[in-house]
Image 1 (cartoon, rainbow, N blue to C red):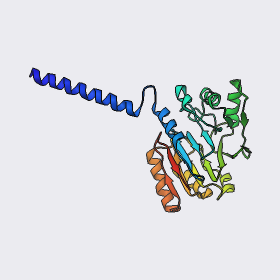
Image 2 (image 1 turned 120 degrees about the vertical axis):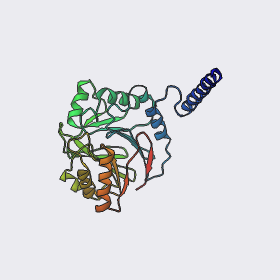
Image 3 (image 1 turned 180 degrees about the horizontal axis):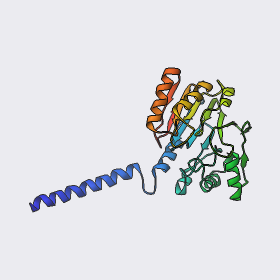
Image 4 (image 1 turned 90 degrees about the vertical axis):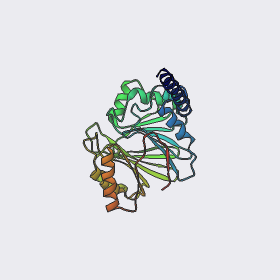
Length: 266
C-alpha cells in the first residue's frame, strides 16, 4: 500500500511539472492571454485588401490593414501591462461612454503608449476632457466625416440610451468597414447601402437595444459581403446566423473566437 502511495505521489508530481512546462510554452512568464492575442494580431501578415482582426469581448476590436491599425471601444479590455504590448496604432474610436465600451484611464494609457488619435462621441469626449486630455482628441457627432492619412471615418447616429451614441463606417486602403456598437437598427444606415464590405454587428445581451433581428436589419440595409457578430450570447449569434442565411444567403458570416486573431478578405 505504501508503494502505491509513493507511486501516486511521483506520478502526480511528474504531471504537475509537465503542466507547468507546457503552460510556459503557451504563456511565457509575465504574458497574459490578452498580451499574447495582441502579439499574434501584430504578427498577422496581410495582403492589400485584407483585414486582420482580434475580438476582445463585447464590442472591442483591434483591426488592421497592411498599413493602418485601429482600436474600437477598447473599454478596459487592454489595460495595465498589456498596454505595453501595443505597437502601431493610428486611431482609437469610441462609440459611447458606457463602461463596457469606454474606460477613460485605459483609453488614455493606450493613447500615451501609441500616440494614436482618439475619435469619441460627445459623452466620451467630455469625460476625456475632464481627465485633462485634449491632445489628439476629436469629438465626433452624428453625420460627421473626419479622417487621418489613409483612414476615413463617418459617424452614424446609434439607437441606444447614452449621450449622442455613434456607430462608425471606416474606410482604409481598399477595405470599408462598419461597426454597430451595441445599437438597435437605425434608418440612417440606409444611406450607406453598398458602401461597406464588412459589417460588425451586435446581436444582443447585455444591450437593451441590440438583437438578432436588429442585426439582420443592419446587414440588409448595408448589403456587405461579410457580417461579423459581436455583443451578444452564443444563442443570439446563432439566431442571427439563421435569419441571415434565410434572408441574405450570399453574405459570409463570422462569429470570432475571443482573443483569437483572424483574417478577412471580402
